[in-house]
Length: 167
Image (cartoon, rainbow, N blue to C red; front, side, top):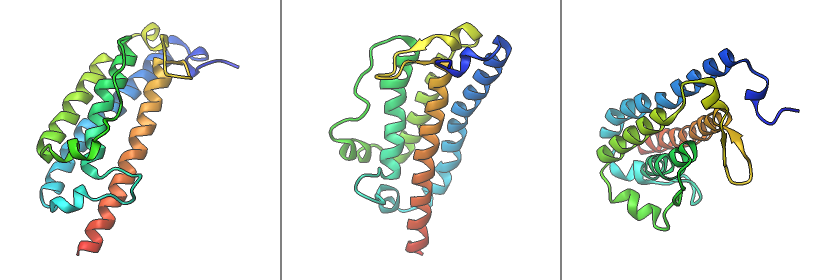
């Protein structure tokens, strides 16, 4: 059984899959940009509210996306030391930043992440030292896409519910 999907793919398939991962990760830049005008029409309590105590508000989710890109994902992909993925005072830090600045920060950090991705098959095959689970860069990029998708889906559903209730 291969350790990673890249063990069974040709170099051409790896490059193609890597380009798809790059496109998926870059899509967040546009998605957050489209979210801005919708949020501008939304009152702060809605995008600062949590669906549950263990789920981030929209502002916290955006703050976490940027922080994780800069402190964990980019360092892992480039072989640099990681920094904490989440601050002790997440709510305080996230809510101290304007929504416009959060959106710009998510876009900037995601551009940095996309720019740190390899363009050749050998670069995608390089192992990333994910704690407890070494993965190829390709497998790690896929993991990031799945985590981001889940987070954004949960936040979008929560925001929709809050807007429906608010009227």
